[in-house]
Length: 237
Image (cartoon, rainbow, N blue to C red):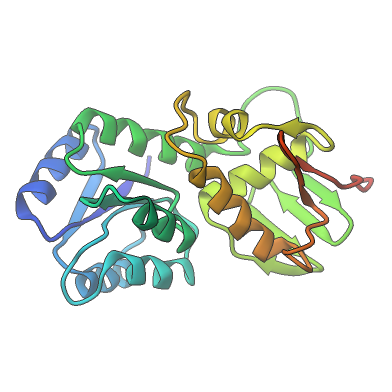
């Protein structure tokens, strides 16, 4: 079985060494980077399954690194930040991060977050059991559950892992209304919604990528006072 490769990018050596030690106990192959430029260099050299990315790094900060990575890959990115301000979290999510964890963090929580992201990214659409349709087709929108891709009007749309999971969940339950808490539980695999921005930012980013007019969404619609629903008649296979 091919080893799962993780990149840990943080300017604090103690954090890099600690996280590397615990991830290697889980039998992951772990590389480390001390600044933003080194992070991008390593990404060009190796194929990673997940990146832990510090927000504040020398030479290039995590936000810019995340933005550049998202132009090339949809692997999970978890932001590490010492800043507990809401604006920093929203900015990281807005650049395409799938999750964030605030320093100082519990190493066991961090490992759990890593495992959850990897589990969803690596096995999504490959569940065992009865055969099932692997492509959800709607007018001008095709969601390939096996290959983890989305096409809009025939053109592939680059989504982050979490954006894909969110769209998959919506499209698998058309016309059903979900609250932000329900979406968080289903997509983020957690019971605790720390703030509304996590879900809202991902929906906003998703709308920009799949909607003709994100300000007047046709696919993911807001149900005021309740939550959101996916509207679309599924095409015949």
